[in-house]
Every structure is written in structure tokens, then in C-alpha cells.
Image (cartoon, rainbow, N blue to C red; front, side, top):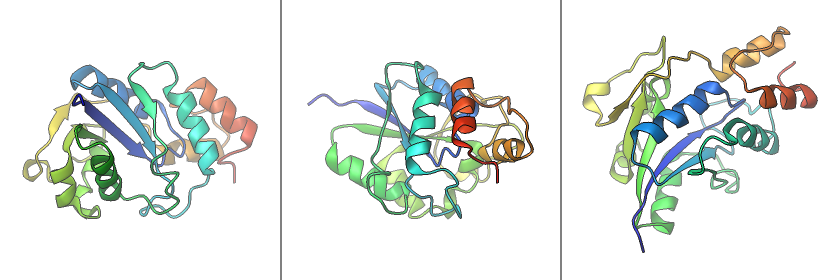
Length: 192
């Protein structure tokens, strides 16, 4: 079977925003990927609540990454496992199910700055390569001691937390695709 290079972009995507989309675009432009899998978490072990349901987040992820590139696919590997999502466990399952592929985990520098606190972080490095895009106002942490490929900056400072705060205050966040914003408004998400 043909070996393929597959990028992985995971997260709670609560909500997904244009920064996530830009990170995917950078990965597609600068890494020699055959495929990019967007992997929403079922529940993040590092976050207290999911605010939007799994089905709502999946719909927003679909809207956010719609028409970006035919190599982009939304994966349900974590949401279908119905357990806290650890990157190490997901990568192990992917490598077991598709051992002929190579994997690149794509991160923003905000996530990368805490990488050494991730569950089995050293073992993650044995399962995949890392590609990191810097984000404004984000520390890159201990980047020298962790092998990774650098991607250009997203030049976007949006975060899901800031967007949720803006929505609660009645603002229309600039960091959301119009389709995602419409869905959030229809569903009444992030208001309380």
C-alpha cells in the first residue's frame, strides 16, 4: 500500500475560527501533505466544559473548513471514542490502523508552549513529527529542546475563548466565518 504523509490538526474547536482555518492553510502550503485530517476532541482533558455539544462542534468544524482544499477531511476518531481525548492515544490508534503512513501533528505556538505537559509527550515524538506555526502574543516555550518544523506565523491572534467572550458581550467576532457565526446565533451558543 502507498505510504502517504498525513497532517493532523486537532482541538476542541469551541468554536472553530479563522485562525484554525489559517493554520490548516499554512500546513497545506508548506508541508508536503497528501491529506490533512481535522480532529475535533470528544472532551479535552485540559478544559473544564465543552460549552457546545459534540454534534454542534462537528457542524461548526464542517462549516469552518468547507471548500478549503480537497485534501482536508474531518475525522471522527476522537468523538466516536467517547472518552477524554489524548493526542498520544489518537496517534497510537492511527499508527496501528494505518502503519504505512507518516504523520505530522500541526500546532500553533500557543498549544506548543505547553507541549511538555501533554500526556506521554515524549512518546508523541516517536509517533509523528511536529510542525508549529507561531501566533501573535504567544510564547513558543522550550522550542529548542523539541524537534519541530517551523511554519510561518498565522498572523491572527483569535482564540476560541476571546470569541466566546465577545459573543457573550453581544459583539460579532471578526474571527468567525459568516456560516459559523450564523450557526452559533441559530443555536444560541456561548450566550450564557
